[in-house]
Length: 91
Image 1 (tube, rainbow, N blue to C red):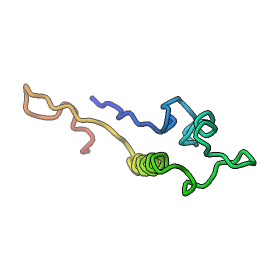
Image 2 (image 1 turned 120 degrees about the vertical axis):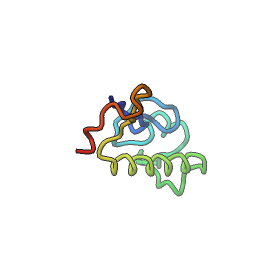
Image 3 (image 1 turned 90 degrees about the horizontal axis):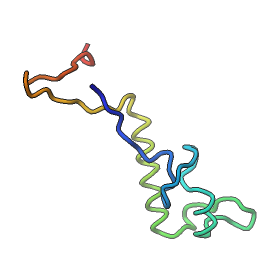
């Protein structure tokens, strides 16, 4: 039996609102925290507050790691037989 590991790639890193996976921050938070320039475009991360930049960098690393993983799953150990319930992934 497998369980998909939940990730935050479809949520705003600040308010956790569901957003498109293409973005890290929702439009409301971009406006609220002054992340937009005068043209309404996103400022470069170097111009963001430190705490938002740290969360953004963490989020990028997580997404990169999940992209590397072809299949994220959790193995369930069967105590009764002291073996894995489904070992087909080895074949």
